[in-house]
Structures are given as C-alpha cells and as structure tokens.
Image (tube, rainbow, N blue to C red; front, side, top):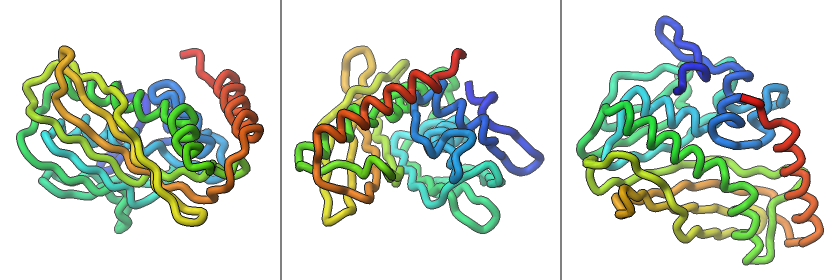
Length: 234
C-alpha cells in the first residue's frame, strides 16, 4: 500500500515531492497547498509519516505521535529499532516522536485497515469540519495564508482483538487567544458496530481573523475547484 510513496535507501528513507503529493491526493484526499509538488515550501504529509511508522512497527493499544519538524524532499529519515519511546530523525533533528504502550500487533491486514481509515478521516477535516467549528466562535482562518499545522495525534484501543475498525467523528473542540488557536478533532473506532477505541488529532492554527460568510464561501469554492482540478486520475 505504501511502497509507491517512499524510497528505501541503505539506512534511511526519503520521500520525493511527487510521492508526498500523490499520497496526499490519492490516499488522504488532502489538498493542502503545502503538499503540492511545486509548493515553494513543500512539506511531506504528516499522515504519511504516521502510516510508515505503523507499517514498520505495527499497532499498539496506546499510541501517541508528536510532529516536531517539517519533512521535505531532502530529509533522510532514520527509523530506529522499535521501543516504547523513539524518534524518527533527519540527522540530529527530531521529526516525529512516538510513544507506545500495551499489547502490540504486526497483523498486516489490521495495520493497513487502520492506516486507510485514519488517513481518510484526517484528510476530510478541512474545510468541512474545521471552518464550521471555528465559525461557531465567529472566527476563521486567514484565507490568504491558511496556516493549520499538524501538532500531534493519539489512538487508544481497548484491545487488539479486532478485525476491520472504522472511524466515526466525535465532538471536536476549538479554543483560541488572539490570532492563535488549537483544534482538537476526536474520533471513535468501531469494529462490527461496537466501540473499541478512540483517538484525537491536534492542530495549531495561526492568523485567526473575524468570521466573514462571503469570504468563507469564496474559500470553500476555491478549495473545491482546486480539488477538482488537481485530483489524480489514479
């Protein structure tokens, strides 16, 4: 599932602009301009790093991921031996911190299922969830520079005796001070209709401004047009 989206070298992994861009659009349905292959400040999707960690180390009952650096096409990512706590690094710079607790599973089918469902959930949050969530407090992102940064995420599973968990949205939260804020997106994991776990995705927002419905309408229209234009055929 992930092999088209990274390159394995002797002792590190790299991700090209084309690979990061295609993962964002083909797998995550994510059209953040930072993931465009011709972006001035290209950034590899955080969900691709999350997916690579699960693919390599498997699933644990409790997992926490903290994004500490912006990965680009020049990054040489080193994946250490799996422990309860470890970091993905580029040289001496920490790019992603990982914490794991509880039982673990290396089941490829379960891992791929969780990756697929989480990434699809994650990619659909903008603008469909984030903009209305901020709008409840009469604020919005800056349409000229919509800075929404992936900070961290966590998953808690009751046990690993599951087959094909799916994700459903739970109640999100948004708090802000001045022009900066934090968004918490929550989800439940279901298996055969029964809740088997939960999780959260945390994002930082900057450039917050007063809500304007006309501007929001223009932003969503621009996003939808951009998505239609850039969506890959395969």
